[in-house]
Length: 78
Ligand SMILES: [Zn+2]
Image (cartoon, rainbow, N blue to C red; front, side):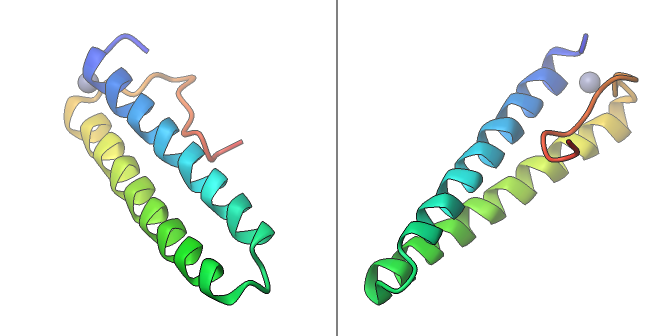
């Protein structure tokens, strides 16, 4: 990826995705523990939102700047 801004946005998105996956893992561990689960669910939802926002920022930049690398993949398009 040649564009520095896209690279930064991509890193942000990768990190947000990772945090969301970690929060989801934590959620599955806490199944059945109601209070902690509720708190973990809230955090997981927040991470998800953050993830979506980071993704939108990246895609918007790609669109506006036209710098999306041909081999460029979003972290969740595995
Ligand atoms: Zn760019």
